[in-house]
Image 1 (cartoon, rainbow, N blue to C red):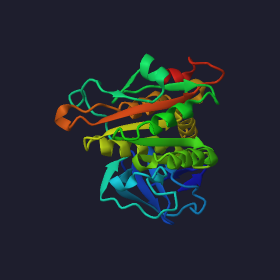
Image 2: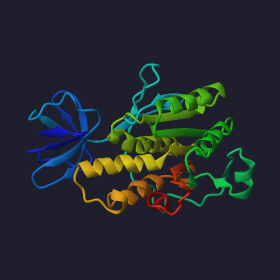
Image 3: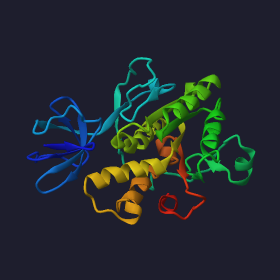
Length: 303
């Protein structure tokens, strides 16, 4: 076992699946990402400071999953769906895989109901449908988060469950958004998934998938959901950091070759369910930050 920079290389762990959770002797959990011929590359869900070189690791036999339930509404959780708002544990009886496959063609239907954002310019010019994906793109400080939070505030009384995923942001910004939701009574139908800038890259990379799993739970229970990823540029950077530390070959702008798949598998989970599945929906509003208005950069064009 070798450890450093949030990555562990484990030798002699033969029977392990891609994406499986592994547990270190002192309790830290990791995810097996790289399966090589003579070792396993694991990303740690924590700082890993207490792991000692050469200590033992066991495979848990579980793929990364989170508990889900109605009790998550109104709570602030981290990428492992553990509460971080200091209001005690969340009761949950079911589990969902963090990485569940997107619904296929047969289980979808075309988007036909509008999701009112409450911003007249958007609702009249480029209306968003329930089950659609609509990118919010712009430079920093151009009001992308404001558009997203206004959309959540406007879902009051519309019977839409909102999930707000904050990736790699300042803790103060996240606290401000949560306070805003609480003051306007929006937390009763909202779940906030937050991994701040000081979180390990692994958790920043996982946060959007956790948010999607929570939204899917409600979508498959015939409810309408909307999910905001704020923002996917930070997730791509966290993934780049993980991949480079795992020695995967870098591509353009040092992002790994599968950075497109990183976002496509996430956004394809947004769907409008067919009538057989109860017509639930999940509307995705990903946010991407551009550098000095360059919309044709690598990550913005991918998304």
